[in-house]
Length: 396
Ligand SMILES: *[C@@H]1O[C@H](CO)[C@@H](O)[C@H](O)[C@H]1NC(C)=O
Ligand SMILES: *[C@@H]1O[C@H](CO)[C@@H](O)[C@H](O)[C@H]1NC(C)=O
Ligand SMILES: *[C@@H]1O[C@H](CO)[C@@H](O)[C@H](O)[C@H]1NC(C)=O
Ligand SMILES: *[C@@H]1O[C@H](CO)[C@@H](O)[C@H](O)[C@H]1NC(C)=O
Ligand SMILES: *[C@@H]1O[C@H](CO)[C@@H](O)[C@H](O)[C@H]1NC(C)=O
Image (tube, rainbow, N blue to C red; front, side, top):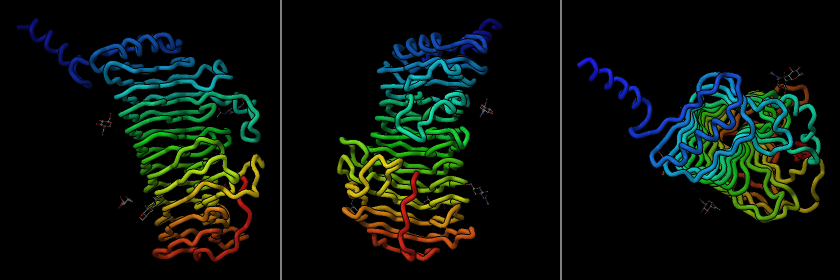
C-alpha cells in the first residue's frame, strides 16, 4: 500500500502544471553561470520532441550570450523563465540580436522572469539617436515568424536597442509584459511590430527611451488594450515610406491606454518623398488618457528627422479611415492636436470624437491644427477642431 501511494504522488507532481506527456527540460546550471549552451541544448531537445514540451530556466541570475532558438519544432513548446538572464555586458556589441525565437508554431513564453540587456555602457558610446551612421546594437528579444503564441509575465530591462521586435507573427498574444529602460536611453523602442497579422498587446507597462509601441509596414490586425506608456516617445504607426517594397498597414486598434510624460502620444508618421506608395487604413485610437504628453495627437506626413529626405515632395502614403475618440488629459506643449496630412494625398475619412486636452504652459492655450484634412467631428472638442493655423512639424 505505502509503496503504491509513493509512486502515485510522484506521478501527480510530474503532471501538475502542464499537459500529460509533456517533456520538461530544466536548466540545472548554478546561478551566475553562462547558460547559453545548456539552453540551446534544452531547446533543441524540446523542439525535437514529438509531444508538447517545456524548457524551464529556474530562479537565479544567469549569463546568456547571443542565442537563436529556431524551429520548426515537432510539437508546441513552452519556455518558462523564472530567473533573470543577462546579456553579459558588452560581449554582444556589434551583433544585431540577442535572443531570437524563430519559426515556431505553438509557442508560449512565461514565468515572471526578465531579460536584462545591460545596455547602459553601449548607450553612452553610441549616438544612433543623432545619426544613422552608428554601430548596430542588438535587439533584446526577437520573435521571427512565430505562430499561435502567448507571451506573458515577462520583463525586458535596459535593452541595448529595441526591447522586443515582432516580425511575421500570426495570432500572438502578449499579456502582462513589463519593459523598463531609462528615458534617455537611445533607440530603445518597447515593442516594434511589422509584417504580422493578429497580435494583441494587453495589460502591459512600458517605460523606455524611444517609442512605447511602434507599428511598421505590413502590420495587420493589431489590438493594444490597457497598456501604460511613459516616459518614452508614445505609440506610433510608422514611420512609413522610408524604404521601397513596403506593405499596407491596416486594422490597428489602440484602446484604454494611458500615456504619461511621453514626447508624442498617439502618432502616425510618414516620410515625404516616399520610396513607395502604400495605404495605412482602419487605424483607431479610443479611450486614451494623456498626462503631460507633448504632441498628444499627431498625424505627421512630413516626418523627416535630421533632413534625411526631400521635404518638397509630398508623402505618397495614403491615410484612410482613421479615428481618435475620447482622448483626454493634459498636454506637455501647446500642440494638443496636429493633423498634418500630405498635400499630394490628403487624409481621407478622419474622425475626431470627444477630445479634451488642456495645456497650462505660459505659451498656451492648447491648439488644434489641421492641414490637408477635413475631419468628421463627433461629440465635443477642446481645443476647437482645426481652429489654429499650422505651425512647423515637430522634429523627432
Ligand atoms: C549607467 O552608468 C553610469 C556610469 O557608470 C551610471 O552613473 C548610471 O547610474 C548607470 N545607469 C543605469 C540605468 O544603470
Ligand atoms: C491562437 O493561439 C493560441 C495560443 O497558442 C491558441 O490557443 C489558439 O487556438 C490560436 N487561435 C487560432 C484561431 O488558431
Ligand atoms: C475601456 O474600458 C471601459 C471600462 O472598463 C469600458 O467601459 C470601455 O468600453 C473600454 N473601451 C473600449 C473601446 O473597449
Ligand atoms: C511634464 O513633463 C516635463 C518633461 O517632459 C517635465 O519637465 C515637467 O515637470 C512635467 N510636468 C508635470 C506637471 O508633471
Ligand atoms: C473606409 O471606410 C468606408 C466606410 O466604412 C469603407 O467603405 C471603405 O472600404 C474603407 N476603406 C478602406 C481603405 O478601408
